[in-house]
Amino acid sequence: MKISRRRIISLSAVGAIGALASAYFTVMSIREMNVNSRVVKPAEVYVVKTDDRVDGVKKALSRSELAEYKGRGVFLKANFNSADPYPASTHPDTLRTILSSLRGGGVEEVVLGERSGMGDTRDVLNRVGVFDIAFKYGLKVDVLNENPINRWVKVGPNGTHWLKGFYLPKSLLEADKVIQTCCLKTHRFGGHFTLSLKNSVGLVAKSVPGEFYDYMVELHTSPYQRLMIAEINAFYKTDFIVLDALSGFATGGPESGRLIHPNLIIAGKDRVAVDAVGVAVLRRFGSTADVMKGRIFELEQIKRAAEIGVGVGSADDIKVIPLDKRSEEEAELIEQILQEQG
Image 1 (cartoon, rainbow, N blue to C red):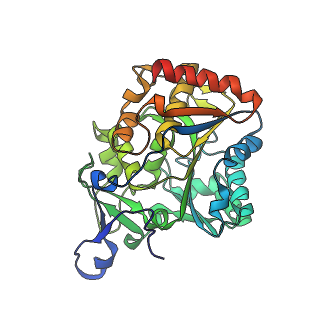
Image 2: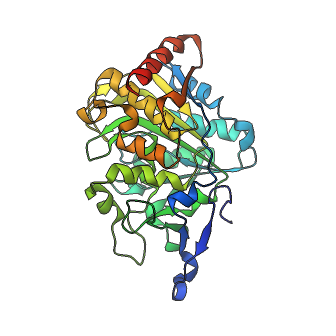
Image 3: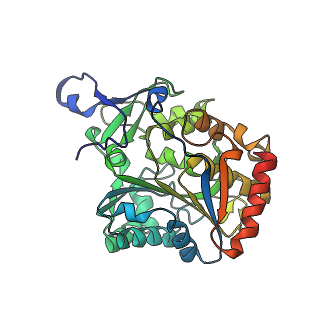
């Protein structure tokens, strides 16, 4: 399958030697990648106040323009960094509801891609029941760290804080549509918070066959970690994000922490806007010093993502939309935090 033109503005082959020659590609710099990008303003972020996860996810997906997915291939990025239960990982009911909705909408193929950071990916996916769910819904599972070199695409370092660039999976870049579902969590290993932008780290290769470089060691030891997280997102487009915030970790994270229960499903197309709303929710419940300090759009993940064109540039560009009567008060509270602290 050819890589979708919609996903990559330009891919050029890099001269290589021997059998690996066709495996290497370089993606243009961030500036070049975003020359033709268009951030839609205002970014609509949908909010559902609910105790019923399945109903909440269905309501959120009603705004995803699923009719456009019919006959298309979809890449799904969930959150399976570890085998710890929700909210450390995607709740099985969230995954089932998304898959059921996609299948009901006539999607041709759904591929879930994952590289776990805390444990062997295949073991993690097995322990959380992904393979059983995959069998039921006809889901293809791409265990990314098992991929050969020709299933990765090299992103060059130009315009980023990555010393050697990084690799993204071809299955992501081949897809017609990309859906992401993430959790509401803080991150004690330098990310500060892990919402939709940080969830993209699970797409990046830790290492690739034929190389002896550890991209995750670089990321987690770099003083630019949060900038690097944002930069991953410049090289692929997300069509819809579902942030499952029925519960979350307001401290600690990513696998454990102080548990909160916002009882929210948050959704939208713009990763920066969704993450800004997620941070607003964390602030409402009280979170870590790194999450609470300063303005939301000055937090490094969000600031860098905004400045390189991943999403909107300010809280003024976000419109929070309640999807039912019960959600109206919650939307107003989030709007107030964005106006005062955004």
